[in-house]
Length: 267
Figure 1 (tube, rainbow, N blue to C red):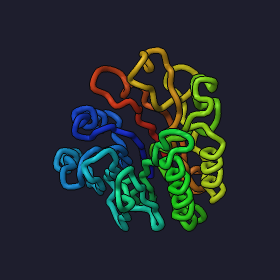
Figure 2: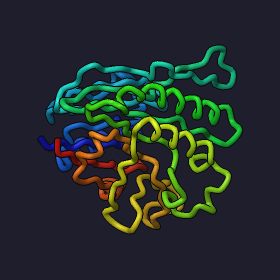
Figure 3: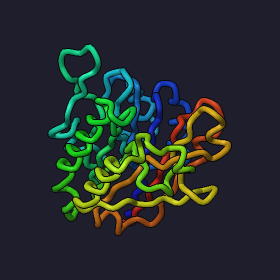
Figure 4: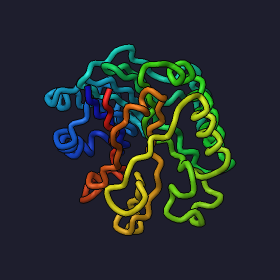
């Protein structure tokens, strides 16, 4: 069977709902991992996507995070949060908050995690340490599935560019989050569980960037970075027939600042 799986940081599913529905109808993914819902679980537009044939597992609190999995292949064994997911202690808070950043489900022949890795803010910030702790919890969470025989992948906004080739100008990002040795080491540790980076092709230009800042004409100038990734185990990666960044979905007004990444499988 052929299966199309995609990931997209939607940057508010409520604000981008018309864009989402239009894209679902045109791209026709069987499974879509969403990040940055910015809505509570009970406020997700379940009925709108149901009309297009998708069941949804959503996890959000209505603030800045939130993740979901949309599937035409069924949703089984849904898990919300990583088993050892750390919380973040915000300034002035008495207790750390476990943010809605990870959700997993089995969709037909594949199992996927949709993840929205913490941004990190700036090197030395408490959020940066939280980001590295979160990556370690993710590494532990995928160990069994990464080594298994069932096709498995972690998809989402990792908030790390794996190499200098994944940013438009390394000098611009020097010393900032998303490119530091510790963040890239966390990605390397994730790959060492048995996962590999499924590299998409670019529909335009020579690098498959997935994020362009709204400011400074980032998209028209192609000042992008690749931070939306598919990390797959061998059975998943071996079945990949194509992968691409749908740059067209980033065009126009009212779009997310991320583009969808699409992966086609022959299982």
